[in-house]
Length: 236
Length: 236
Image (tube, rainbow over all chains, first blue to last red; front, side):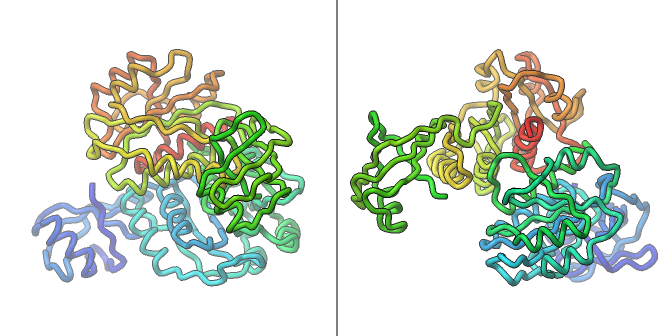
């Protein structure tokens, strides 16, 4: 099954951009009258009939809408400090999308070696992963902010967890998830050099619960993915 | 903390190969008398004193042995069909090592597009990941065999699970793990084109239990990692 993406939908008319049109018409050789599936990126899959097989701007008409296509029964925000080697972060974004994530928030810690994070490639990666894993909602890649700003603006009604490496009283992420009935979950994952004690203290004051991810020493991107998997498993 | 690797240990004398010696002496500038940590790849960490700071063949004397360093309380064999894009398989091997795996067994399915799998790069990747994640045991990368041969030779006393995509009666991998007290676990993960019905039937006859990994459509490498995470979480 192949899913196209469009953010140009008015009423029952769906326009594909140049890249998607070329893929639909030139590569997959769809013709007028063919049934195609288009995701709106917000969670709905649109079953359509191709009306104009233009390789530059194909147009399709919606026949049936399938809301919540490929959705998951939780809302997960992964706030993760960008890794020095950014390939690893991109990999994490792809895998978290496959498993199920709603927001990927790059956050810059006081000890982050990487202080900048370009999000345009991440946008493309999560879109491609959402299509590939048949999810009609594309995760939002947030604009990078500092860890302290992220903590200050984190939603009040969510289960908020922070994973850090240095000593402190923590429960396992699985225990913290099991003990809560909240399905809006925020997990904060630090940089290679860990959070600063100041950041952890600010998080705890803001209602974040310290958690550990088990005894294995995980890289930043593996820790983020392990957190996403632990949420996924809670609802398996 | 930096761990070196040696497979040339006789009595209390540890020899580092040329690569490790150069890293120890030239890059990290260790000198005679320094304490260094060396893993034997079998699970024991050796705390040593450097006796010969040769950049070609450094020699150290064992002061203290720490068996089970970075170990996990289960034995996991991940038998996974090689992916078409082999980078993805290498990534899986790295991440599974970080989380905790004992054997990575490349298996070739009837529907595998990739029929060959070179293991020498995998050996280097799992060694590097074990060092990085402070595990003194390096996972074994098995010689590739066919799925049917793997099934025929799978150990009798292990909890054996097979994850496939097509219809069939399955429980979630978390349920299957929770229902068993066996800590020797084998998980079989198919290729992009899935296992053949013949392979699944042979697995079931050999005592493999069909499991699913939840509702997300996961790529082969993500499925393998998700299986490793589910075992890790059972013992978290």
